[in-house]
Image (cartoon, rainbow, N blue to C red):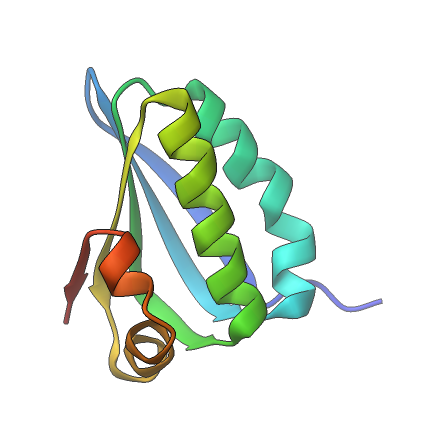
Length: 108
């Protein structure tokens, strides 16, 4: 069995925000391995969770679905989710599927 092609690195930004740097490919296989970690981070976040996608090289529809599920979990917990530094290829998918209309996004 191969390892997932995405990694998560968590950094507290201040007393109310947490940043999660993602790197690699956000695809079906990776989603299966990181969803529980993101759900846990959502529950532990105080006010804001920032997903830094600067090093995400690929995102398919399962990755987009994960981002939207994370957004719903955050909203239910009263946590603001934002996506930042989204690179060219993942940005195409995120824009085409309308994620940027539901979740605050900043593009590289």
